[in-house]
Length: 244
Image 1 (tube, one colour):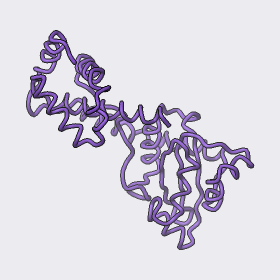
Image 2: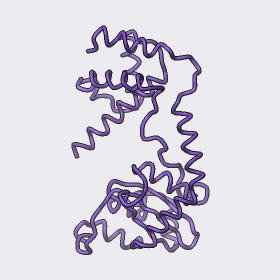
Image 3: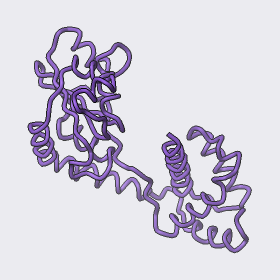
Image 4: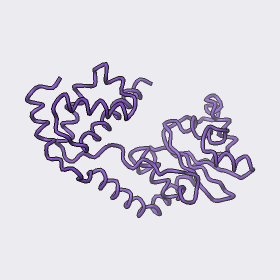
């Protein structure tokens, strides 16, 4: 586990927490959302230019291309990106993301498999076209960033099928570099334990973190606890992804 010198350093780093202090992640989220809303027109122009250059699929084609052999016979290969579903009759949109877009997008045209409103309008006979856009050909760095910007660009929450915005934050924003270093230090010490592998949801993670704080006599610091929870979650996600 952690040495006494390491524990002493971590305690010193965490003792500056002031109850009621606003998390730095809050400010980051507010600023990011403001900037993305300001850039909606620019993003839509970029995505429309890509959509106009690429093939647009019908729901029937997507359902056919869910079969890998059918895709390959047309020279199509799955990729990581977003799909933009457009109801041409209502001029409304749904935006989603997937590591394998062909394996995901068709679900919205099946009962109880995707967005129910999209499926209902499809059954009523509305005309749909679907654009599949690889992350690699856009100006964005992650699927979360691309999806959230696209949802805002096509206003698909207020005037479309999306119920929630995309994920604005890919990772928790710590107060400073020392907080990040302390979280990495703790994570490196606990990640190989049997108990660590049993932390399958946020409730279990927070209970474990609170117990760990008590055991190590660390000062109460809710911002750091939340950051450590996110760090554990992201580490576990990366491990699962590497095993696929």
